[in-house]
Structures are given as structure tokens and as C-alpha cells.
Length: 540
Image (cartoon, rainbow, N blue to C red; front, side):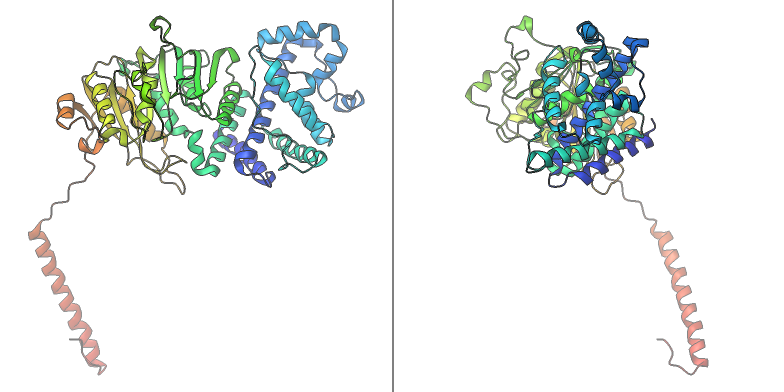
């Protein structure tokens, strides 16, 4: 599918959402829309795999015959005719595609119920969602649809009204998708498109779950490069990758896309917001990541609630080949008295209550493997604020952990208009300097948000990869210079964007003025000649 076709699919689905959400706000309707798209993907993938496994035994029945049999899907016919083989078949499917969906819960069945205004649609959806959460996969996905209230009065005050509303929504989605091919990548991309559209409609709330794809691409392009010698090119495989504030999972999926579907042993993500946590789990599955290939944890990273990370035994400590993150900017937190002894912070100090930026950074950095790379998006304040933040910054610099500072343009995010930066950190880095990249002036201006074009992204990544210096854009700064600047990493201290004023040739300007004055006098004399002939007053 071309980008143009993908945009058309996304805009088709967005138009449906905009038309049908009625009394719901965009955030509420997002959960319905994305969940139905998710069900469509799971169903298509499962039915295609079932058809392949059953071969000639897979029913090939015309629609009118299906109606006579009162069946909503081909697979439902096979189930009814092969009851004794269902258990073996489902065991096979769990091994092959890692999940099972009963025929009555498939999208094709749900869409047919919606088309015929079946009064049991709502009840069937409720049963289907519970089945997918608890029984479809080897590992349970409890609460996956917890944010979708099928009994919400926003759908209708009584059951028949709610059922009818759902029939309309699902029928419209089915009709909208029908004109497009819907492979897993396509539905996954459409899912990402809709997340972006809902993010745009949510304004500042979007900062909780959405990292623009262009910025996502920069981080993923950086961390997949060889950590010790980025110029050597990309790594081919990671054992583990972590995003401890993963939102909808787009950063992790971008890293996976860079390395290929088999390039990561396991993806790890953590998300505090329950709605966003569910989005991330759906997003992983929608992009073809098997349930055994990822683990998303619902909990607070700052409190370190995840058992596999909150391990004090050094022998059991988790190490990740790449850490990426876009945590909440300048988040207010309550560290508590014991936090200074937390193994993540005790060698550096505790970030102030007013801004948890360095707390997030140190959390992720603690779990970075020796040969790994960490890329994190933060507000510019982390580069120059004093107090506890300066002490943390100094320690990281003196230990040689801060590799690159990248300044980005303003107004790239839905959640804030301020410019942000990317910090690249490593446990062991070869260069004894810090690379500064000032990319703040390279963007395409948009009505609501500015955008980074592919050439802007390539310039940033290439400059990082080959550690290139360029006037007014990139500079390698020694630790001696940084120490003299009192460990202040404000980019403008090292890279000036001011353009020198053009030198003026006073002699040439004087000559030009003399010529102009002569021309003015000649024109005035000529004009007065015309006025004299007409008997009109002359100009002074």
C-alpha cells in the first residue's frame, strides 16, 4: 500500500470516527474505534492462518448458502461440522499464531451481526472481549478492553439504543475498510495514523501517549547504530529493548522496524496510564509482535513497581541493549526521604520535586547494558538548571556518559510548544568530548505543529553517526571547555546561530546615493517642465 493509499484509509476511518462519535469526546470514542480495528486485525490474521492450516477442508461457501446455514463466517461452518476436531485444531493454532478466537467472536461474525442489526450484538461483543482477554492467548491480557464501556449511556440510555449505535459504528467501519487491502502492516499503520489524529484532537492530553513519528524515527535510528562506533553502521540484533514510559508503544515499534521482525529477542515497555497501557498492548499485537515477544507492565517507573526491574541482587539485574523514552516533561513528583538510597539514584543524587526529568533519565540509564545506547527526549531545562540537576549532570559528564546533545525545533509535539532536546547516553563511549547538534532551525512549518522532513531527520542521524562538525549546526566540545562552562550544556553556549552582519562598502553606497540624487533632480526638472506647459504650479 502506498503512503497515499494509507493516508486515504486513515482519513476514511477518521471521518467515520468524527461523524459517529456524537455525544462522546474524542478520547472516549478513540477507545471504541481502535478496539474494533484491533479486533479486525486479530480476526483477519486468525482466519488467514486457519485457512492455510485446514487447506482443502476449509469451507468455501457462497454468501446465500451461509445465510441458509445461519452462519456468519466460513470458520463457523467448519466448527459446526467438525466438533470432534476443534480441540486439536485450536491447540495447533495456539502453536502457530499464538492465539485462538472462537468463530462467533470473529470480526466477520460481528460485522454481519451489525449489518443485520442483530439485537445480541452488544452481548456478543462483551463476551468476545472477555474471551480475548482471558482465553485467546497463552498469557492473559486482563483488562485489555477495560476502558471500553459498552454499557455507557453515551451510546444510548437503553440497551436497544446502545446496540443500534454499535451496529451503526461497526457497519460503517466494515464498509470503510472493505475498499482497502488489510494486511497486518497496513492495519498497524492505520492504527498509528488514528492515534496521531486522536492525539491532535486531544491537545495537551496527547503528551501522555503519543510521540510524533518523526521524533520516534530519530531515536530508533540512533540506538540501532553500533554504540562504540556508530560509523560502523547498524547492529543486526538486540536481546532486549526497554521504553519505561512507552505510551502507545510507537518508539519500541520503530526500533523493531529498524531491526526487522526477528531483530529483537524481547520488547519491554512500562506505562502508568491504564488507557495508554491498553493501547500499547493492542499496538504490539496489531504490528505482528507475538505475545511471547513483548511484555508491557502497568505501573509507575519512578516508584519502580515492576518486579523484574526492582531487583536488588546484582546477579539478577536486567540489562537492555537499547533504552528509548519520551517521559512526561518536568513532571512534579514526591521522591520521599528513602529515595536517596535507591540504587538508581544513590550515586548521582535525587532529582528535585519540581521536575522529575533526571529521575526518569537515571531510571532508564541504570538498566542500560555496557555496550548499549540510550536516547531520551527531555525539555531544555535539563541542560542548564542548577542545584541537584547540575550535580547529576556533572556526574554523568565526568563519568563520560553523555555522548550527544541534540536540540530540536519548537512546536513538534501536541502536548507542548516548547523546543525539546534528545540526550544520547552510553555506559562506555570512545570519544572524550560531547557532540552538540543544533537542529532547531531545520523543519517545515505547519498550521498546528511543525514537522521534521526526511532530509531533516537524515541530517541529524548522519551528523550523530559520523560525529561531523558543521558551522552553526554541530560541534564537538571537549570536557575542558564544558568544565569551564560549569557543566552547563545549553546548546547556544557552544553553537552560535547568529548570522554575521553583512559588511557595508561605504564608498560604494555613497557613489550610489550621488547617482540616485542626480536621477531624482533630473526627474523633478522634467516633471516641472510639463507642469509649466500646463500652467500649473511647479514642484519645490
